[in-house]
Length: 181
Image (tube, rainbow, N blue to C red; front, top):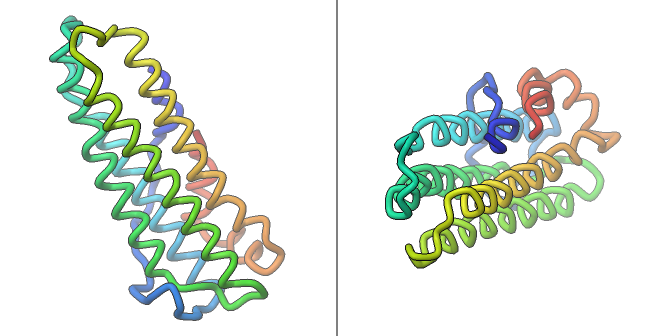
């Protein structure tokens, strides 16, 4: 399926510093917590996809809707939790750390909102209009695009000269980068 590329298994565990958006934290703490949070989110997205309740030979619209909502709902919940965890990471103690963290939070919030809109659009399609191939492909394309947007947003931090050395040493960052959709 199209989405399989975007949901490769990621190792590691999540976690954040448990602070607030205004808290200044060491670059190593910020990057490590962020990458672990993102690996956790990737694992949860993969679990949600694997748990999708689709009857393989059933292309009835109601079954398709129910099956995809069994994926979209946990994905949305996981994404919203990830955004909350990232908001609590604080900001890295680097030049423009507030802007770096703020831009990332804004981009992740936008991606989460787009995933939610996709889920709501899918749920709102009249059952008479649910066309298995087109509806599934369209919905999964939006999901994959937003997952790429999340990866792109996070990976931009790894390009920062002040954060790059930490990014390169952190195994969770390497795992996250390798599993890019």
